[in-house]
Length: 202
Image (cartoon, rainbow, N blue to C red):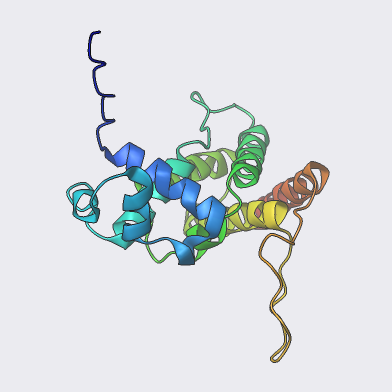
């Protein structure tokens, strides 16, 4: 009887590392993620990961980039700036629904990603079309991005009030996100705010 060839080992790559880390975050949270646990799931020695990822912060940045790349940026951008930002807002909501566990850490991270830069440029182009003045552009872009990603996090995870001192912590899986209709309401409120800003400055 012919001997069966051993199963071919899947090569280690940054993409495989980031996807596996993302799955672990969604299952157990960012705080529980470690290089040792990640290596165990990947079936490799922990030092092998460091050939592809410098440290845990770099690992998280790769995970954030992976998630953000699933946010579509239509090219060409819709001629109607409202529709362009509306699609972006809905995209944020959909990605947050897909990966609710990673969003809180992504929002509070001190470091950005290349994809985040692309999203900022997309927002700026839409705001220029809307008529936002150059001097208002940095604040408007930052506010819009913060609002969009924060709204998406609330839509996926619900509004989490910090517990009072001495009260028991609630399980992180207990909170329920808001509906798609709630997300759309938030997006339209955001667009109305931009219109008001343009009208006032005009």
